[in-house]
Image (spheres, rainbow, N blue to C red):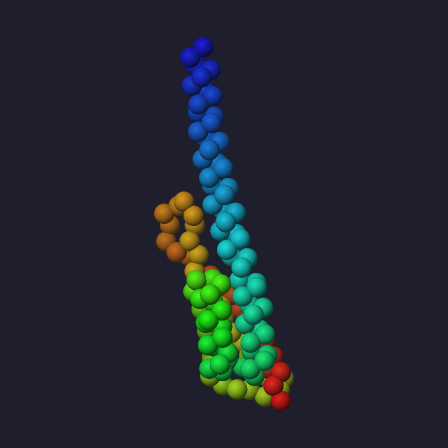
Length: 120
């Protein structure tokens, strides 16, 4: 009789730990997926401003702080340059992610992107 209640307690404990890991990994995947909407915003700013100009960088950083709490940084070799119509601007978004409930270091994943200047 006692073994049955101990086994039920162990199963409940293992189930709780598995649910915790599944929730932590699901939240991590959701945060990693947020880079897609941020990359879309970066593309629009590059297209409207003719590159990663000072105005575009200011808009991107403001949007990043407001919506993502400064999680992303945008790096490019073509920063502060206004390029002509049809020029391709390559950039890299680096996101900082932390796993919930787990004491791991913050992970950084770079995402490459490119956009076309639409300013004549």
